[in-house]
Length: 117
Image 1 (cartoon, rainbow, N blue to C red):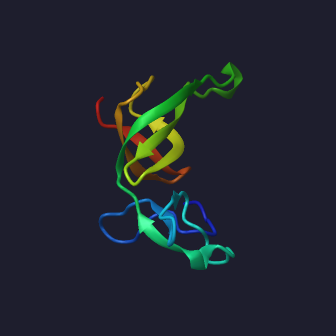
Image 2: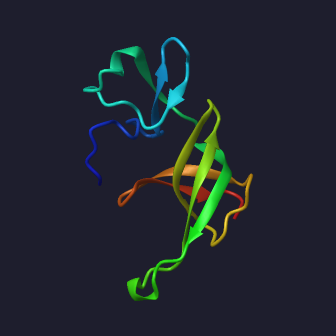
């Protein structure tokens, strides 16, 4: 698993991505601020909803020499509101507005898996 200076997932059986919410403006930023951040004291760590909708995406076509298949990267709107960038899995080509769920991933920390597949 990735080693990060900030918490990415909540602990427990129902793990959720963690973000930081400004105590005054209530603006949510992802990922959660690390404890060493000078802004940490002005924020609280909050779990974000696990399901969101694709706002925008692109399909990456790696070089044939890499041996990797095409994959999608996109922005997912999560209620709260927060917009999170990540890898979109479960379908070769997402559609704007489709529902995706955040899941832990060993390589990337998290991915979004299609629910409408």
